[in-house]
Image (tube, each protein chain N blue to C red):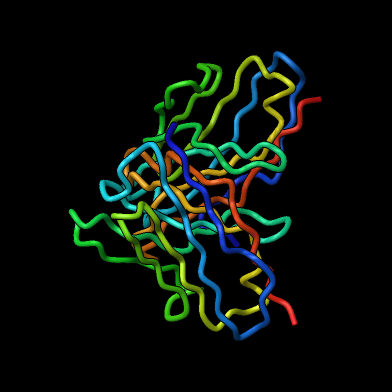
Amino acid sequence: EVQLVESGGGLVQPGRSLRLSCTASGFTLGDYAMSWVRQAPGKGLEWVGFLRSKTYGGTPEYAASVKGRFTISRDDSKSIAYLQMNSLKTEDTAVYYCTRDRRSFYGMDVWGQGTTVTVSS
Amino acid sequence: QSVLTQPPSVSGAPGQRVTISCTGSSSNVGAGYDVHWYQQLPGTAPKLLIHGNSNRPSGVPDRFSGSKSGTSASLAITGLQAEDEADYYCQSYDSTLSAWVFGGGTKLTVL
């Protein structure tokens, strides 16, 4: 079964850091780009960033709201993608989803169950 | 303020047909970028419903269909069922922002 499982969420103080993990199973992570999407409480979906597969350079892109603070990386040998979040703000409070991103025609076709990040003092 | 505009809510009785619009601009939908639709049932993660404007992934009932014209796209649901009650989001790429963008979401209520 194709599956993504996020972990690493929790309560963190403003200005601190947190790293989320996304473990893939049922497919070869290295063959795909991966995106992170978040959803603030009671709000809609917001794209956070994505990381191309190594075949396409392995380079990232980020939303303006997180650029310079968040970093997406991957360890294809372990089938894990990461979202490193630094200088966290209260407005980063959300459920964070990792997705398998098949880009233009196919969209985000696999989603994890999400992990909750709460930024509060 | 989302780059893609959706109605906040729509409703319909069981068996009826409803449509959800997604209005963009010349830097996203109108530029030819594909539109995708996601369904988010209460308390769950989003699920891909329509990809590439009008294509259904395996397992999605043919009651769901998508279309695109100009700077807008639409999701149609026929034969409404109680289990269709969910939030629906459209998504595309925006060349000005160099980013994936989502609509604000539409809450479907089955009366």
